[in-house]
Image (cartoon, rainbow, N blue to C red):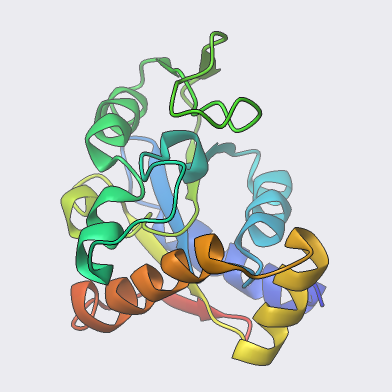
Length: 194
């Protein structure tokens, strides 16, 4: 179920209020587990805020096979925050940013041939799991956690993916580590979707 319009309006007002004294582009991270509704919320907020949206999936770096390392290693490797940093830094400085996204169609580990670009905007949304990583905290102004029940997420994921096999489960375990350990003391500015 998509977020209710009233909830999205309240969240938009909170973001606008938080950004009222910002002198540089205001960067919002929308984080949450797979299937929680981050993308839907990002596009709703982008329409209301006239924001640029950057998908953290463009920076996927976790490999194309089932991994045998531990959940902590997978959480560290899944999204390449080192590639995200210069994109956010450029936008924060009021400069355009370009990057080459992971080629999900080829799914062989390479980046796509066609670069993506974002122009500076008053609001920039970084959407996806791992968008609130500590390594990006100095560039992000407002952190949103999208949090729904495990049952809702599972239903959405089954509808989207068709099945939840070993490849998907390895990343769910990595997300558990990320939210349970890496972000254990992190405070989100807003929690959405409960």
